[in-house]
Amino acid sequence: MSRNTTAPPPPRSDAATPDQSVSTEAPLLQVRDLRLSFQTRERQVDAVTDVSLDVQRGRTLCLLGPSGCGKSSVLNAIAGFLTPSQGEVLVASRLVDGPGPDRGMVFQDLALYPWHNIQRNVEFGLRHLLPTRAERHERARSWIDRVRLTGHESKRVNELSGGMAQRVAIARCLAAEPSVVLMDEPFAALDAHTRINMQELLAQLVADYGMTVVFVTHDIDEALIVGDAVAVMGGAPGRIVESFENPFARPRSHLVYRQPGYGEVKARIFDLIGGHHDTDRPNQE
Image (cartoon, rainbow, N blue to C red; front, side, top):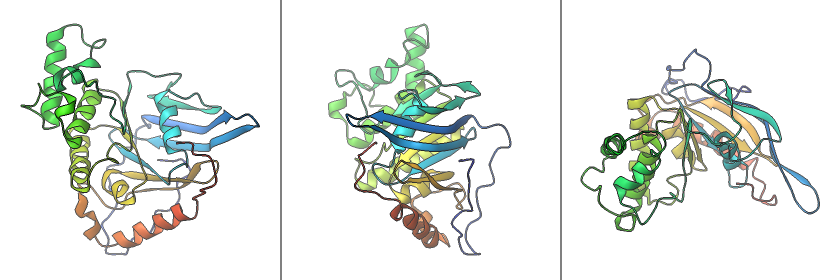
């Protein structure tokens, strides 16, 4: 979560209690006073400013906000794709100075290799991590099974539904066993039913394997299903407007909206996002 944590949107007194699994150990991921700038022909523009985040091991943080507020820019800085203009990113107390195997990325556009089948796609990222093909094959098969694609290993990407393709992308990322999993609106292009299934699959994988995840979304309901903590971004330049623990404990499903206090929490987040949406600024996502 952010260091500048404010009080969570208050649910009613009969609402679900917050997740009590917050670790007391040092955060696995730390973002400190992050600023990201870019140069136009006329001037330097700050895309993101003064962003600080802490994410403990085994937890999921959702970066939530409207398009253009800098969510993806923050994610790309954590991945090492963008160099901070100011501040720093640390994973396990080590400075991030570029992409590395300790961080895995799942993109909205999947970035799968259409000329390979599922098995080969999942194995691809293991070429430099495991010395033998047998080890790569076994690791890939294990994760293919965990994302419920056993029996489809020989199918090529163009034979897959959107949900199946996204599960391949997740398996490819997780098979490399990164310390931190970064997900940039991975379910945005899916139909509503498939999206719910993917959200619940992700929640199950996080619970089963103790994954540490930073998940970008502009969907409030998705953030409250997936995230153990939520950091709302907005403004120009983008910044953390408010951050809080998800007041609805694990396990969470798409039926979380039935829990007491859900409407109040969602309305509070909606007000935060609505008050910091600037449609005139350049899109920095």
